[in-house]
Image 1 (cartoon, rainbow, N blue to C red):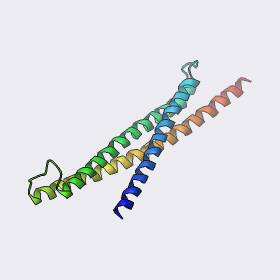
Image 2 (spheres, rainbow, N blue to C red):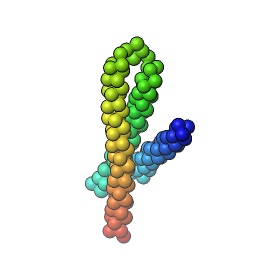
Image 3 (cartoon, one colour):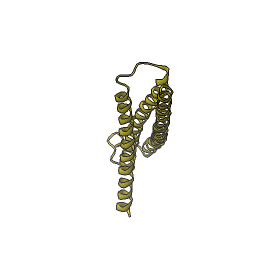
Length: 151
């Protein structure tokens, strides 16, 4: 049963990592496309929606990186908890049961905090990617409208 739980956890972790890295790649690609499309453009009010889109994609990338950092911190904390529970944590060897239990409680609180932050950052990563896409779409439609006025 423990092997099955470990395998399911590993599979879930791998899937989540792929998703987060996909969103990071999408945000980076969209920034690149926006830069490429505006290499010969002049600064103008009509570019404001595109600037907001690029800002959102930048924030999406930032939040994705923060998600990874907090996820890693959660995993390291979880490893420390397991080592403390098994009595093999190097900093807790020879300590009293009360000391070890207090350390485990503190690590559990840190684990919860890190997990909550990681989840929050993942949600913001996705939200900003979508908001950026909507701003980009608005900018694109606006550019089409301005071109139709010139014809």
